[in-house]
Image 1 (cartoon, rainbow, N blue to C red):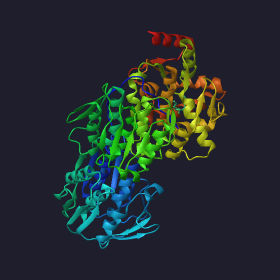
Image 2 (image 1 turned 90 degrees about the vertical axis):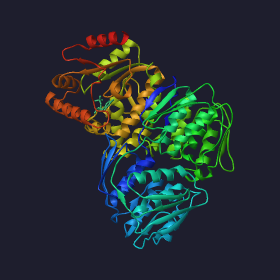
Image 3 (image 1 turned 180 degrees about the vertical axis):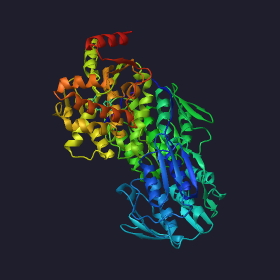
Image 4 (image 1 turned 120 degrees about the horizontal axis):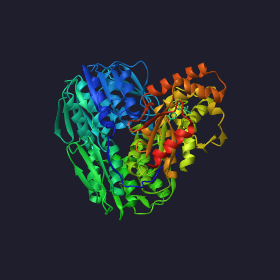
Length: 637
Ligand code: DC
């Protein structure tokens, strides 16, 4: 559950968004099939791209990842993919499921592919039939034309193949991507309308960057020469579908949001969403290296065909209630077969927030209205979750029932959303107190909070609570997804002293030796940190500020805090204080403290550091009162 905090100030921000999912997965395939090593930068790391990476690795491609620099180095198989020794598991990823079918055929041996229930219920028949017409044998291990299935491409040939285009452009892209490694030239003919055609253009653009030879005979006819791919250095653009949420947020809030690194020459069709916002009244500035939207006083309804940018339909539908007139979205019946039945989902969830929306023959009409407090069901569909988050910025009381589904394509979505709230957050009376274990920051934070008449939050107690619940459920601490799900599920209440988790008093438990031993690992889990950051920011927004004490408050949670303090003391002094509190020996505690310091300051996500704007205070030899008075003076200055 996540209650979306409304915006209190219009944003004025530049955002760096993660790389495009669609380009990442295409570039991974082209470089996996190329000869030599390709260097990809701007890579998106999300569930859908990890699924692709795992599948390619199983087919013998060596891929090394650098999550800090968002880059990947891919040693291509030169078109000779290996038969995997285990089933390819495509989870819920549509691109991986569709793209891996022809890739599996390139292995020339039997390859089994399977995935989650959600992907099994999406359409794949047209693609399977097209591959069968090219000599690929497919054995359906469950229902026909879906997963699980077994592909055998030993008799794969080139020639001509016909595909229907009304259901998904991914069928065409899938065959195109594998075609340079076919034994002979392949001609692809698209029958009927081609939905989402910009995605086929994107596929061709990426393929050409890796040396593929594609002739576009017409809009619906392509010839691909059997040249294979060459390795390349390739920069992936930020994700335009992800950008749509922020463009929408600017348009409805009257603020300005600029996305850097995404320009007017983008190969992603979803940048056409800007034309829709412009028609509704927003001001759009396009340059070669950035795109920017400013909301104006006018925001009118629109009548628009979105067949070529269907991933942005939920974005438009979620902000449409705020327009002055009705919005009609046309030509998108096919989105009923995406991660969820998106048309059904939108009508139903808009209804829950009190908005009148109805399905039409090919799309949806949304009427203007005043959104009401409600819990929105996300259908485990990342785009439904992200779209309703934008509506939640503009009205109070919108809660998402399963916010973590954004991880499919945009694991850092809620952190970026918090950057949109930065102007409002800068007005909060936040005092950030960070420092290592035993530095005296808890006692100090409590005291200063009292003196300043602010609420106090011990954020370490929150990480400890997650660790305590994980231990009580005997969860494996290195199962990051499971521990993050615990963080997301539990409700932690902290009243300045005691800690209550889901109605149970855990005040004692969270200070016990088992939690002490486990908490650093739990606190190093990026999924846990993301949930905790969200909760800590909400805690302060509700109270207009507060004293938050931890490790990353000034550096990450509230970089715009009114005052940041970094408290420290010598390890001996810190151990002496803990020894007085616990009765354990100083030596024993020094060892534990030093170990925990190392873990906290060397982890990848938000390591313990003194922020450059922080006032560093060494409390060795000082009384609590002295330091508290000093901090109070700095805060009120
Ligand atoms: O302050 P403490 O000892 O109760 O913190 C417990 C653990 O949680 C410690 O390993 C550091 C971690 N922590 C963190 O990583 N970030 C915070 N904001 C607070 C605590």
